[in-house]
Image 1 (cartoon, one colour):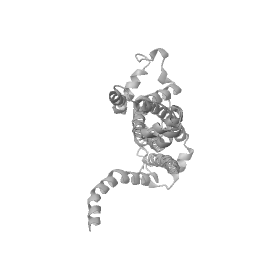
Image 2 (tube, one colour):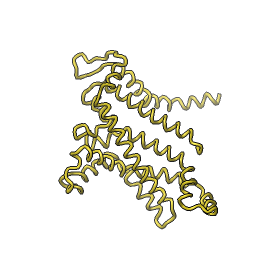
Image 3 (cartoon, one colour):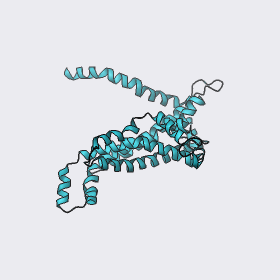
Image 4 (cartoon, helix red, strand yellow):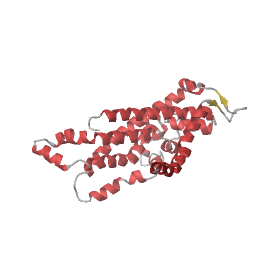
Length: 280
């Protein structure tokens, strides 16, 4: 009886989750199997099976946007992890004003992405920006991508550092003292104590940031709009353009489903690695 009451109380939350999460996913999957372009005459819903997904295989722009998404993801997450790990190690030490430094380091992460995107757009402006003497950086494909990566690293490195710092705080000081007594140097303590015990936190942190970076939309939309040309167009931005600029809901939905499976594959790989880790 008590068990049934528990299910009853969980039912409203489950219905809400289904309404705001599962139903849109199922609806997108349904639309991906149909042809529905509101800009074309007779653009009513028509079942086409897997034709939309076959079109993705032939769509050079889709694969280019996927490649640019991977470049952005690998570059930004890699830099955020290196910098975030360094900041976490620094903030884990005991020094005067450590609490204030921890609070201040979170300021970039607290700023909304659209605001930080506009901030960096002004910084890289070729007329009145700080780097204006270097010319129009964002008018070049490489410069525009680098600008996006720098902006994302600046904003989300604090998120990485605070997660890693939480993991460092859980490691007992007694382990370091025992290692020191055994003659281990600081580097060996880091290599054989810190890294093995921090591995689960590292994997979870990289998982969160990889998924977030792979789905990047707002920063690219604000700073470059996918330009110059389509050199910084990510998969999410391309999907948005197909859906809301070209009004091709069938093909746009298939792109969103394709992105969903890419994210699921990334999550699966991380979880497999996490499960195989002996420290987990």
